[in-house]
Image 1 (cartoon, rainbow, N blue to C red):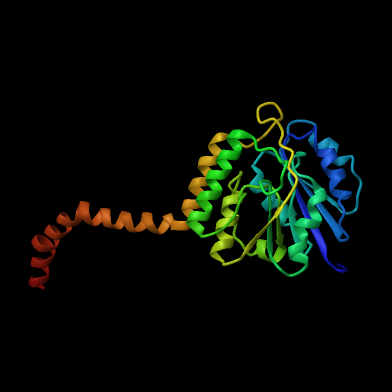
Image 2 (cartoon, rainbow, N blue to C red):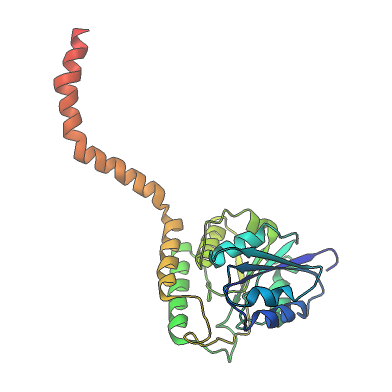
Length: 266
């Protein structure tokens, strides 16, 4: 579509084996839109940054964090530099294929959606890596239960947004809680999420540098609960009630035996 620019944010942390190839695939993706590629080097300690800098493209922006801050922070940093009307999140490994961009962008370009998630489990032939698949299944089920959604793959790395939608969400995430946080806040704004099937080639979780850890699942679950039940208000009310319960008798005695007699003498 003429006049529409796609901004692609690629968070990178120690992906020297794959980052050059994924950037090539992103630029070669079969979409007829102006592209803006924003690579956020999140404090990599390997040769990732050097490989990124070998690309000399006018529509490539490279941003570096001095220290590793997490995928969520990398996305937030990249979002500040977005100038396109649509923004797409692309992982720096080779698990997800930029050839799926037309399918991911379709519902937004046709006006049927403002947000699109990829789903790895709807396409026949995609492998499902045991423990991570089960963890994702649980977290997606928890999302559907808490937020009345009908998602099949909440934690999929492919997420596409109309830029105005994503920029109007106040993000607090630092690591992999980006997925549950943005999903929770989208549903609270009554913004529909459309899923489309994508290709998926999982890498070995133990030997290929996968960054997602077992405890990130716990953080994701807490994030979903936090934004559903507004723990800040719950904790505040609980503290006030606890205070009255613990100190109520003392304040009643103080008022009855000290303050009230003094008041009567005035």
